[in-house]
Length: 156
Figure 1 (cartoon, helix red, strand yellow):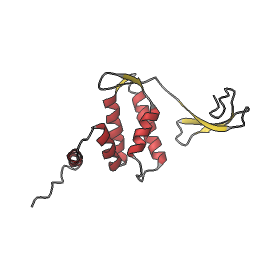
Figure 2: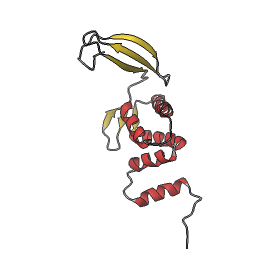
Figure 3: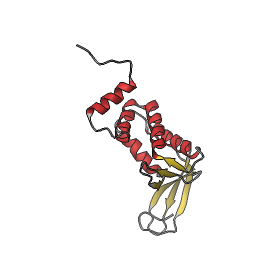
Figure 4: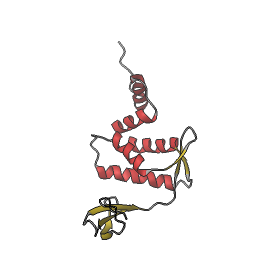
C-alpha cells in the first residue's frame, strides 16, 4: 500500500481488526520511510459491477459515489452514522447478489429510495428531488402528496 504522505510503496500493517460495520477490515499502517501512520479499509467485493446510465453510457460502480449521495441526503438528520453505513453496505450487497454485473442506474436509485424511505422521510424526499429531477415546488408537493395520499389539501 502506497504511503499517502511520501509515496513510499513499502508500508507495514501494524494492526488489523474488523471495522465497526463488520463487513470490512480496518488496517493501521506505518511507513518506515517517513514514520507516517494511516488507516485503510478492505472490503469483500463479490463481483465488478457496471452502472448502465439512462443514456446508455456505462461506468464502473463506485461505492464512494453512492455513499456521498446518500450522506448528502442524510445531512443534519438524526440518524446514527453506523446506521447509514449499514444501509449502504446492505444496498451494495443487494446489488452484488442480483446476479447481474450490469445494473441500470434507475434500479440503483429505486433501491436507495426504498432504503431511505425506511430510515428517514426527509432524506428520502431530498434524494428523490435529485433522482427524479424536481424542477419546481409543485414537484415536491406532488411527491409529498403521494407519500400521504389520505391527506387532502385544505379547501375553503
